[in-house]
Image (tube, rainbow, N blue to C red; front, side, top):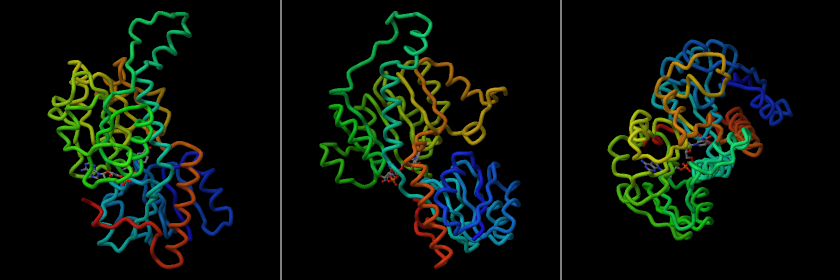
Length: 334
Ligand code: NAI
């Protein structure tokens, strides 16, 4: 089967080509992001392989359908960027990679927590300039602190396990209880209680209409003063403007982001020679107590191998039986 693969970087090509060593499918790699303007590049393909910032709205899907594309194989767990009702109406199947090393994202989340708390980003620069003063680098013991985990699926559970290992008290909020967390001694509480009691709040829920701007002005105001907020889920779960205001007032003590609401125009490319047009993002980068990484939580050897292998499994089954191994259906938009 011919597959048009969008938003590819050299590492994507390397891992996908390795997974397709038997050449069961013909891969055509495109660097461009998939949207209605670039969809025509899928000419001749029966499947399209897309990543997190590709724009799979009704217009793009109609264009792909007109070209003969019948499968959208996502290289991600999240599927908030696909108009699922439009895909269903066109009879197009959508597959995803539901799990590929939850450890990769959970460990990156912990890296953000530790870096922000112990100011490693600032210490690194200071020491290189011969400045060994400690003023401004004061952190706190994680041991005994309360960590609030919002979304307790595969990644949230893995993060909770690590934080419990530090000796943290873990509070959890999700629509359904994950017994793995209760076995750890974590307590499920209503969201307002989690926000009011946590020293660190970490987001691990999908982006849905219910979680869009879950952390807004109001939520931030109900959190402990000086709280640490970490988002490695999807950018729009946090209202970035509200976060800037809370950072300015000191209500938000520190912020670690691996995802950003408007990241589609920024991440996964080198923009170091261009001017930043996003003023909210530019303001975030000025705070000493903010760390932003460019959606790299998934970026480990194990995760890229898992993404490539599961993508191949989705393509194989679609070719054999007309359905991907891990389908996403309209009912999943909750
Ligand atoms: P999962 O499906 O295993 O878990 C999601 C959890 O969120 C479940 O516990 C679910 O009940 C909960 N949830 C759903 N709606 C909620 C709501 N309204 N409020 C609170 N919790 C809610 O997903 P997994 O694999 O743990 O991934 C979580 C998210 O992490 C993904 O949806 C994706 O957005 C993000 N992600 C980020 C990556 C990165 O590189 N930064 C890589 C992979 C995933």
